[in-house]
Structures are given as structure tokens and as C-alpha cells.
Length: 189
Image (tube, rainbow, N blue to C red; front, side, top):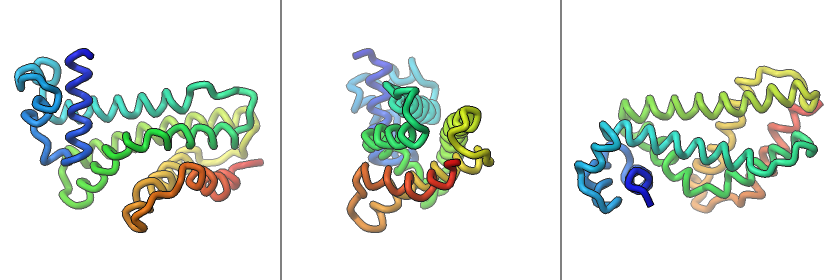
């Protein structure tokens, strides 16, 4: 494994466990089994490490949603399969969940900015998929940005908030079905 990848994985693990504020470059270096100077050879700051870890998480989620989707299946089936695939990456969501927790509890400025960037990136991606579905006549015209935002927030509430409130997670199938039956059904023609 190359050093940069090892450092990113260590940073993701540290941010997911301890949060942004409590993570140190020393911790990341120790987890990655490299010297502190090696971390600085690849990343200028802890903030840059967080940004790279988040961008990697988003890229992996996009790749997972796109992989092997049959273009001939319906919009509902595509979304259902995409949600199921994303849910398989729940471990990746631990980073996002920890960032949301830190944003709410500690109001760390770097984390607040990162959460906004993450949300904009994901909403933009979902909105583009909704636009394509409208162009193909699969769903009715709507405010795609608002619908994408609602999909993201519903998904996060069911993955993160539900478990924090009720102590046990919903299954992947349950989450996908809830989103399909409530939000997505309203978009269909």
C-alpha cells in the first residue's frame, strides 16, 4: 500500500473515532505507521487531510452507485439499487456521522465548512440524476435541488439519526423501502 493511501485511511479512522478537533497529525502518523514528517510531505494540514478523506469517501460512494446499473431498468429500481449499494458502505458513514456530531456539539468551524461542502457535492450529484430522469420522462418535473436535498436528509436521518435515537439500525432493505415508498413515489409520473 502506498504511504499517501495509508495516511488517508489512518486519518479517516481517526476522524471517525475521535472527530476532527481531537485528531492530531501525530495520531494519524502513528496509525499509518509513518513519521509525522511523512504526513506533512503529502498534506499541508489536518484540514487538508479531512478534505481529502471526505473527497475520497464521496468518490467511492459515487462509484458504488454507478457500478453495474443497468440503463434499461426503471428510475425507481435504479434509485433503490443505488441506495442499497450506498448502504453497504455504512462504515464510511461513520466519518460523516462523527462530523455531524462534532458540528452540532462543538461548532468546529472547519467541520461546519466541510459539512456544507459535503452536502452541496452530494445534492449536486443527486440533482443531476433527477434532471436526467426528468429528461427521460421517468419522473415529473420538480425543483431537483430541493428534491435532492430532501433525499439526502431523509437518507441521513434513517442511517444516522435513527440509530442514535433508537439504538438499533434499520436494515438496508428497510431504509431503501421507506425512501422508495415515501419520497420517490411522489416524483413518479
